[in-house]
Amino acid sequence: MPVSSLRDLIDANLHMPFPFRRNPCGSGMAAEVDAWLGKWGLTGGPGVPAMIARTRPAELARCTSPTVDAGLLHIVAHQIAYQFIFDDLAEDVGRRSPDRLLPMLCESVEILRDGRRPSTPLGAALADLHRQVRERSTPAQAARWAWKSREYVHGLLYEAVAQTQPRLLRTGDCTSIRSLTAGVEPFYPLYEAAQPRELTAAEVHHPGLRRLSRLSADAAVWTADLFSAVKEQRAGEVINLALAHQREQRCSLQAAVLLAVRQINDTIEEFQQLHEQIEPELSPAAAGYVEGMIGWIRGCYDWSRTVPRYADVASVPAVP
Picture 1: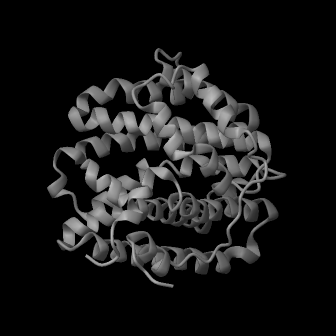
Picture 2: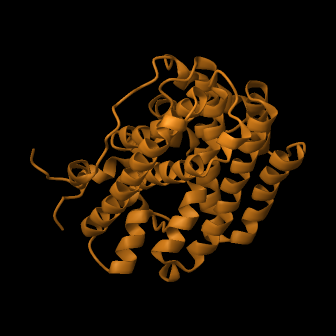
């Protein structure tokens, strides 16, 4: 097939070994997500309805979580929509003044860590999301969800600091921050909750499973970075794997995207090899948990290449 656009170039070079899947329970979920956001006053912000229409959080939930039941799918969709709004606001505030970001981040940490009462609409939505997770999960799973969510919140502060000196940001620094701001790993305790029995402590802390978690989250968010690079470059954003390669190598965007694709392919290959190595010792619950990780690798690809938010990638030629 001819490769004419940057999107075609990504499709031609990215190794995606996992099959396409979509959750069949998503009928009417987009409207339900909009209603949940409206209930907590999150749709009144400047540009928020347009942003939600362009990001399609319900569709991302269906792509990344193809096998969970309808109840868990709604929690995933709520969390995705919440994080899109929280992330965009944090980027906007943090780019102008990182210190102004502190009250927003501190409220989230206090809700997640201490159960504090919220004082803002964003805080109220997070508290309700936390309630949904606690009702569906075991105490240990809910605690892991809150811990991973706090890591995501802390990552947004690192991102704000990095935005103040983008020329000094190395690729390694970018990937470290991106692993936090991706917000992928907070979803993984939900895939624990989807299993017929709770994972044992030995399984939760198994070095192989922990490495798979890291690899899958990186592969998922870096794949999204490929398709969002054009949009983020035009917006002056810096925490993006392809843009980090472009700054460090001083090359074209197309060459930088190919460098990022190579890094993603190596990550997916390592995931596959490690999964194959430890698969014989996984219980059915642990195997289902890993399937949740695979859902994010494949789901981020399918969502990113078609979502209107990243449509600009199709307007850039494959050759500089």
